[in-house]
Amino acid sequence: MPMYRKVNKNFFKTWTPEMAYVLGFFAADGYITVNRRGGQFWSIQIVDKELVENIRRIVASEHKITVRFGSGKERTSYRLQIGSIEMCNDLRRLGMRERKTRSLVVPNIPDNYFSDFVRGYFDGDGNVWKGLLHKDRKKRTFAIYVMFTSCSFKFLKLIHLKLQERGLRGGSIYRAKGNYFRLLFSSNDSMKLYEFMYNKSENGIFLARKKVVFEKYVILKNAAVV
Image (cartoon, rainbow, N blue to C red; front, side, top):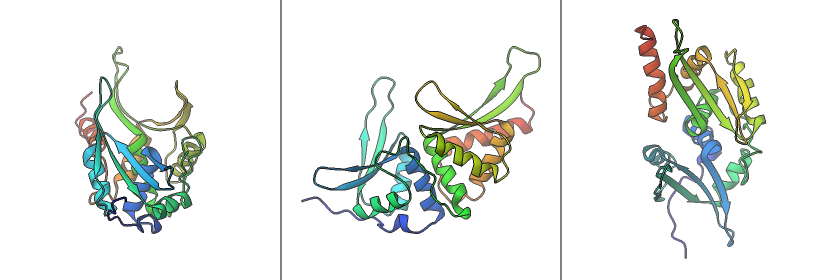
């Protein structure tokens, strides 16, 4: 007989900043599974233990976090798996499916929570880079780039359109070497994204190691270190 562990089964029923963030993160790094007995589970698995612990706290879960030790170039990762048919059905209602890799959709997110959803997806399947461009030239440029990755072109396209509605002017989607797409933003839009994603996150949830890249860029740029 399976052991019952507490969790807030109503978590995905009502929009909150925390719910939007976790939903965005799930869209990037989560999945639903159904076992042979009909049990249904939603899971997230990432290399950042602290973030998994924060998500477990937010959903009021007593479930264990399991460890998958890496070997070679593979990093150790941490998984939170929660068994709940009700929560899985709520995720399906929001557009998350068992095989969502190519069919991922952007839910109908209230405007107040779109930045939280984007930040959650960014923490899961986004990347930020800062550094010098044109190092071989006399005039070098200090830049920052933000990328979102997905196997679903439609998902990235809709994210792009919604961000343009909120003031971003550039950005481009291209197919990478693997079977996936990337939405790339250059410096000006990357800093607009920084303001957009973190404008109300001081008491919220975010992946610190990504946020600090933006903050270091601001410090170095203001100090004119190139």
